[in-house]
Length: 125
Image (cartoon, rainbow, N blue to C red; front, top):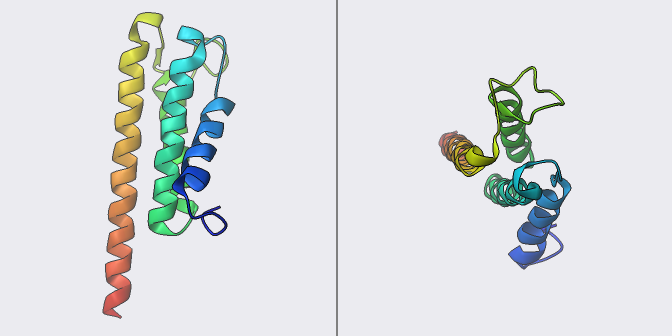
């Protein structure tokens, strides 16, 4: 979308809002709005990773990592709950969102570091 639109509002913010809206789940604590906000912010980070690396593969990899963390470490009671080490509770939702965002930030730092390393390596050839 960045090839069509100059504004980051069109190629980063609006798709991130849509990404968050698609992750809305009414059974989640707080009516799903905290989950929707966290995934919307993750979508923004993924859009920035795509813009920085010039490839959607970085965002796909980060999304895969976040999903694996969500399924294996903290999950919703019910569907896929047998894989999660912990289940979210209403009282702990804020902490889970913070942990999720820290994981996304760590994934972004790794992706950007790999991107910089790869670009530096290409310049030496």
